[in-house]
Length: 305
Image (cartoon, rainbow, N blue to C red; front, side, top):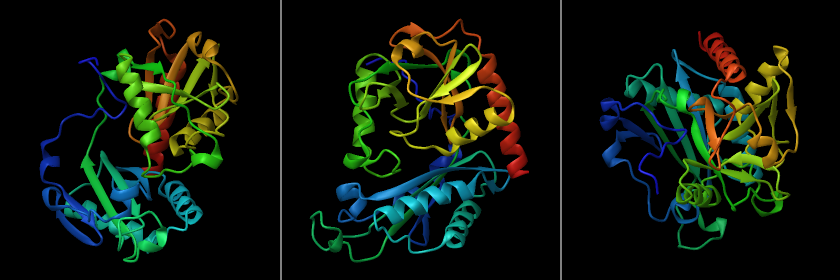
């Protein structure tokens, strides 16, 4: 395993995070005292949903889009959220206020089916109501990757068919992606590039994946990947600014021969890809990626001003 490994979630160190307060079912407690039961459905089975969000200038970027996905996923697995959107916003605000946070903040909102009465799988054994945890950190993405780019390795672990575990769920059950990440690290890369069940390029273990060929932006069909909020914003920005964009099937041959490649996610926005399977992507110049990054930054500033 390389000692020079990076991730798309690399952040600048911030000492303030050592004393953050975390929201646990309505209580705000020091991070060292934030705990859930070993009988909790999330700990025991990965039975829960989560959202990652960012706070800029006192505003949660694209809050409605994140809540659309969150509530839809919870409904699909019969998980009672226990509050409405206004309640979640209130919990977010209380947590931010308790930590003196206003901008450059990353949040992980986690909801599980709650504490079980016995250590078994059946959902009916979760009888306490849902467990909600909110972790917020002062977090600015590290800038080093913007020039070097992330290293990807194609991994044997795939994003599967919807009837096994639909990749559109932002669930606590992330073992599929963890295995892909381990496979990439064992291959000497930073993260794993995952294919779909038909062998087409799909996503990475942590982010959505895009390539640029002859000025046109390509990404997967979206059938087998998390339909990320940032992913959709990039597609919308391309369409609104006359950048040719395609949601389509394409193979590793297309990815290896791309002029540029980048990842999208709530934390890192757009992270360039430097190489795939040891093959450098393009010549290091990334004009389309740079333009998209600028457009996205303008969008966030307009949304959170």
